[in-house]
Length: 171
Image (cartoon, rainbow, N blue to C red; front, top):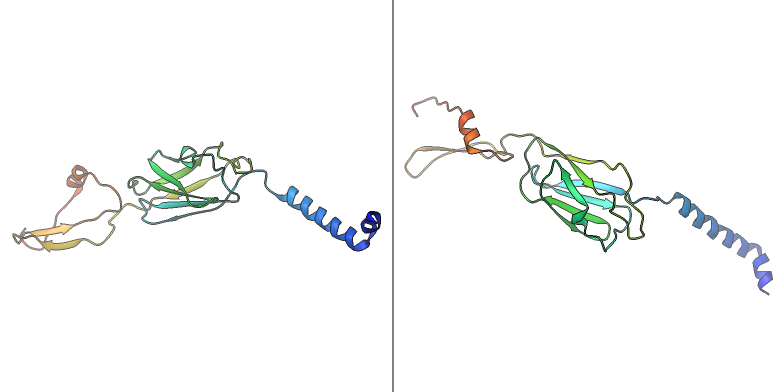
């Protein structure tokens, strides 16, 4: 009886199809954990970076131990699901700087696949400049005040040495 089932053309075709699908998946599947998408959101100098992988990450690994920025900057790394990491600088980054997200090669998928080699994830912090138009007002004593908000950190001494004040009237 079992032999008749195996010789049946319908069953043979079904078994052959299942075998071919299994082999195709096995040989076309990646042998490495790879990044499927990389995106940023939020302010230029303190963005949230989202990395999506093509497979679940090993739950036994702390992702914060496997991610860093170059040039070096302190970051927070957290999981947002089995396949996603969120990275955020702990403070504002200098504007006009290109950063590289470095993933340590020992980061692995839950199924044991190692991280794909030569991954390049980069982002820019945007151009340095005014984050908004200057705001002119008067203080409680009637003196003019101008508020300047920059897109990145500025040292007060550097600003003083490069600031030039012009007026159409007496100051």
